[in-house]
Each structure stands twice: as structure tokens, then as C-alpha cells.
Image (cartoon, rainbow over all chains, first blue to last red):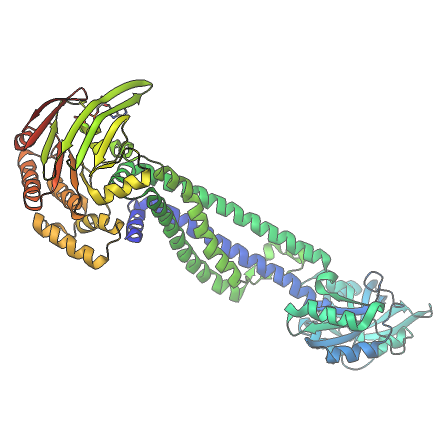
Length: 404
Length: 226
Ligand SMILES: Nc1ncnc2c1ncn2[C@@H]1O[C@H](COP(=O)(O)OP(=O)(O)OP(=O)(O)O)[C@@H](O)[C@H]1O
Ligand SMILES: [Mg+2]
């Protein structure tokens, strides 16, 4: 009966309640969209980095990450290879030879990171193959090179054209080779496209005077949640001559950005929450002041102040939960098609490219976001009702009854 | 002994620092089954006296005994509990909760005292039938006339079988005929169920019907008639 009473009380002042409800609904929709868009963006930033090159875990000789010179090759790649093949949680891995080099054409030259790969291994790790816009991926053959669109433009080369690559070899001499462009790719980031060129691993080994040396193993896990576990296992096995780094350690800047992002989401939540709270405080105060006589009667006939207090909190709670349910449904209905088609933010694409998310964002609504909204908003409503409810509960029946 | 007894009852309000002596020493005993009217000019202390008897307020001096219990020293919650179980109230107007139907309004105090829904409904129907207000069951207060609302208020006041029903100018907002009907109703309840009623009123027709009349002046009992 208290519930019925509270529910009907809400609808006494229809317009006022609809306004509060509307503010909750709009707030919730804003939260859902902002949250899902932000999470989508963060996820895309990470996925792009992971999928273009970084992978989940990398294994190097100790110090390679800080100083990626060719001399820092892995002490015993065969051991790492065997270990990764056995390690639980590792889905795929790819071995790489990496060096800084200069790629030049008839018209220009550009410094790039040259990555020697086994194509069949690398396709399991990165999305470069899927990002091809012209030509094909590397085959298991020497003298082929896949470069980014931006680099192709800069060097003014197209499919089938030849480029010369140079890099300093182990002995200190300059190693060089001629490659034919077989594929041109384009990823989320022109910066990345300008600076990464892929060749057949044995070819690069030869150019650098390597024998079977490998610079890095890139690892993809079956379940990303297990990264720390897998990392710990590998560190223990490999010992101190190696470094085993997760993508979070490999992308500290991005991880920092993600944190900053999460904080801005939190600030956004807080602003919306505070606005809602004041809306509720205001509404409930008005509704309490309008009902002083009635509260007097309720107390006179024996309703305890505590119960009156609870009734007003219940009213706010019902308002909050109604708004939340409506807002969540509408927000979800808006979100669904957007999650499917993505939101094209090419108007701001320059900014987005520099943070590496790409210009079409696919919002991601996590169950956590929905659940926390469903708990937090009614809680905010109840919090906002505490002061008005206290005002009501502190009334003394006689003064209240005399109030008309 | 009486079901209500006041002993040297005094109430002094502070009106912006100026003491207002609303009651100055009331000694009064009400017996079970009485039908008592407290009359007197405006400001003589009628409402104040009813509020003190009804455990809505605390005296400045003196005591109120309700069925031999001194209620002057009770805490807020205990007073609420006492009102819920022992006292029925009918105020001058706006007695009812606007969002509840007549039936729900009557049911409300039983809900507060934790009576099961089935029993509540049975009892509400019984009382409504007795007061001849079954037709109002589903109506909200704004769909009822003033007289109908007061009848529903009477039903609510008696539904918990209180020791005492206090009615502060229950007919003040009603026309003469409607007021008379309401009084008939309360007289019947008084006669048939031996419910004790205490009224305050200026209304001559209420005073006329009083079986015991107390006239207050300046916070004191100036005259008593039976
Ligand atoms: N809360 C209060 N604060 C200050 N003075 C009060 C308060 N309540 C009543 N009084 C004063 O106490 C005196 C008695 O008031 P009370 O309401 O009991 O009179 P009453 O006989 O019921 O009058 P009426 O016939 O007008 O209802 C009056 O002078 C009134 O102004
Ligand atoms: Mg009065």
C-alpha cells in the first residue's frame, strides 16, 4: 500500500514528474551514448594498435624495447619458439626481424621500420593483409615488399615498381637489397602507413647478415584476460636475458590516454549525476511543501515519521527507476543501429587519426555500463530525496495540520 | 476513573517570544461512551485541548491520562503508536489522502497497524456499510462532496476500534443538513458501539446535541452542562 501511495503521489503533479523523468531519460541516453562511444573509441584505438603491429605480448632480448637495434636479437629463438608452442593461452605467434632502414625510389627516400616476417605466421597476428588496398600480401619469396599507401605516395611508387632498401648490417656494413612492391596497405593511421614496410623474413636476415637470429616474437592470446598469467609464465621460463611485454607495457602512452579517457567519462557521469540530483532535490522539495497538511494528517492518524521518510525516498526511487528503464530502453534502441553502422566522425577525423581510432567509431555498450547506470541513477534519486524526506519527517503533526 | 483525565493541564505557546496561555489549568474527566462537546469562543483553547488529549502535542504543565497511562512523557514514536491504536481523528476539512480512494483511506490506518489485507477489506466493508457509504468505495476525495469526505473520515476514525474519537469542528465546512447527517452518524456509532466522542465546535446544532457540554473561556472551563 505504501508502494501504491508513493506511485500515485508521483503522478499527482503530472507535468513536474514528467519533467524530472525526462531529465533522467535524457541523462541516461547521453550516458549510454557517450559511454558506448568512448568505450568503442578506446577499444578501437587498442585494437588498431594491437592489430596493426603490437599484438598482445612481445618477447625480446632484454633491452630491445628501449633500444631496438639489430644487435639486440634474441639469444635463443628456438627456445622461445618451443616455449610459445607449448604455453597455454597462446593462440598464435609470429617471429619477426626488425630494423630501421631507408627505402628509396627514383624520386625519394624515407626512413622506415622494416619488418621481416613469415607471411603465414604474421596473418594470424596482424591485420595488414586485410588492410591491403592494392596488390597482394607477401608470399614466401624474396625481393617482395608490402608498403603503406602514404609511403607509396611519398616515394611515388606503385605496384610492380622497384625500391631499394638499406640498413646497417651486423658487421656494421651497409646491407641493401632491391624489392618489388607487391602490395600497398592502408590502416587507421597514415603515420603508421608511412613508417612500416614488410618483407620476407629470410630475405631481411640475409640483408642484415643474420643467420637464424630473430628480433621479436609477437604473440596473440586466446583470451586477453590471461595476459598477466601468460606473461608471468614466460618470464619465469625465459629468465632475465629476455623481456616479455604486454601491449599495455608496449603502448604506455595509449594506456595513459585510456585512463584519462576513463576519467573524463567519470567526470561526465558526475556532471550528469549532479544535475539529476539537483533536479530530484528540487522536485521532491516542492512536492513535500505542497503536502505539509497531508503529512500532518498522516502523522496524526499514526504514521511514523520514519515511514513517511521512507515513503518519500520510495517516491524518488520510483521516479529514478522509471526514468532509468525508459532511458535505458530508448538509449539501447538508439545504440543498436549505431553499433552496427558505426558513427562516422570524419569531420573530426584528423584528431581521431592522431589518437589512432579511425574515423568511424563503433560504439560498444558493455553490460557493466548498463548495470551501473541502472544501479547508480535510482541511487542518485534516493540520495537527492534524503533532504526533502528529512524535512517532511521532522514536521510536527500540529503545525503540519494547521498548514493549509 | 474515566478513559481520559486531565490534571491541571496548561499549555503556553510562544508567539514570537510572547507567551500565549492557551490553556490554564484544565481538570477534566471523560467517561467511556460520552458524547461531549467542547464549545467556546475562537481562541479559547478548544483545538489545543483536543490536541493534548489526542497525543498530538505535549502539555506545558499538568498531565493527560489516557486509560490511566500518563502520555505527557511519551516519546514521539510512542505517541504515534498510541494515536494509531487508541484515537480516531476527524478534522475540520482535508482529512483524506487525495490519491487514495475512500476505501483505501479507511484501510490506511489498519495497514499502518499491520492488519492483513483480507481482514482489512472485510472490516472496511463492514464499516462502510454501517455508515451507508458503500457507494463511495472507489471514489477519490476530489470526487466526493464535503459531507461525503467527512463521513469517510469518520469511517477512518472508527475503523481501528479506538478508545476515543476526537473531532475538531467536524461540521464547520458543511451546510446545516449535511452537518446534521454527519452528527446522526456519529450519534449512532456512539449509541451502538459505545464509542466515546469528543467534539470541539461553535456550531449551535452540535452544541444542541451534546450530552455533555464544556464551555471554555480563555483557556479555562467556564461552564459545564449535562
Ligand atoms: N501553534 C501556536 N502558536 C502560537 N499560538 C497558538 C498556537 N496554536 C494556538 N495558539 C493560540 O492559542 C490560543 C488557543 O488556540 P486554539 O486554536 O486552541 O483555539 P480554538 O478555541 O480552537 O479557536 P478556533 O475556534 O478559532 O479554532 C489562541 O490564542 C491561539 O492564537
Ligand atoms: Mg480550533
